[in-house]
Length: 510
Ligand code: HEM
Image 1: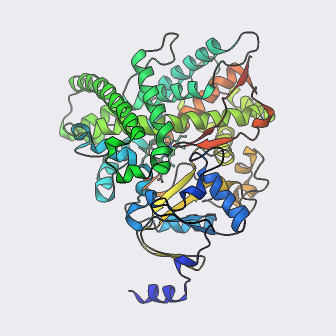
Image 2 (image 1 turned 120 degrees about the vertical axis):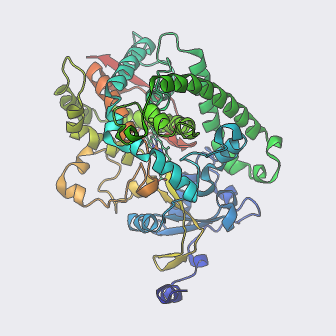
């Protein structure tokens, strides 16, 4: 052991000294029984963690140790929550060359391994580990993350958002002006429709008066898998022990997964063939590929590889409920803070009158950026950042061994008055005012993650949501029509955080 690590280890307290719950840690289940929320069950685990910290141990503790075997199978279920942004920074700084999220989305990995015809070459950027992850991430990163790649879709995203405005008009009761059903479902359709532009180089037809049936089936598959996600991860550790085909939730998810994969790959094959026949590139030209759709660029650069198909599937999986829920939370925050909505509308009204938005207009929407960042802080869609530590670190004097699964729970960090002044207020201004902005720790709210494994679709997601908000606010005054009990909005966690009750807004034409 290096001398420095030896001295540090010598001084540091043991991992077992980190505060933990007094509840029993069961064989196989670990602390899961204590973590099930009385009403929300396994969709309220993070709320239970907050409760254990605040009520059972000490609201000021910086670290919480838990045993959750199914989340860290290879390291005896060792899990730690860190509650301070300074410690989140230490985790990110020690995440290593190949950051790893561990078994948190293991179920998807298992499903993918059972389709070697598609995923035999790679499990994709979302799920690969180590050098294999690095190879696939490097292959796609530039084409997805550069600002120009998202802006390529500026006009198409405006068309999708225009269709969403029409869709809202159709689904709004003319007398009450309130949307029928749950707007979140419509926002997922918008998310799918938007991400398909990049992932599948096509429109899905979900926002038409008569939506495409296949696209509807696909979105149902995705909703079903997400709905059952916590069950497979938390409530059914037997799934880890028994053969997969014995497990009914697993079987249901697998059915939906197979259906979705077959529908999507069939679509992709047609699209890819079309693109291939259109595209004749010489090897030298490949580095100059800039102004093409993302899927086309991937096909041109990796003509005989599974990467374009698997990346398209990753984008669709990662880009529907993240974007839809974030847009829903933002709308709710703007509807319940009409003064902020008005300020944002003023900003938006100064651009693009009578003509589509330009990349320059997008670059100037500073108040929108503050509104969105604040919405992500106030009502996070991503419950927590997750990392398996590739090396031992010492935090707050405690040794955290290599292989520990660390959670950084954003909701707790971003509602801690130590990190944000009056955290329960929705105040976009805190991100604009130089003094207040400077006082915010840079690791206190990171909804897209950080470092080499951060979200690859961030620019695309931000642009999608900007354009949607622009179109909605220029067409409607948006008021909250749900219950007064719903501010702040009660949420639960499936794959991501989402509102518990239907999103209901009153849309008044401007
Ligand atoms: C508001 C919407 C979104 C949020 C909040 C979000 C958030 C995140 C977060 C937190 C991660 C994990 C980062 C980490 O571990 O450090 C992630 C990963 C990822 N996201 Fe997003 N995301 C959003 C939209 C999208 C969209 C639209 C796409 C596709 C175009 C996308 C594609 C991905 C992919 C492929 C990964 C895996 C990256 C990797 O493991 O290397 N995301 N996202």
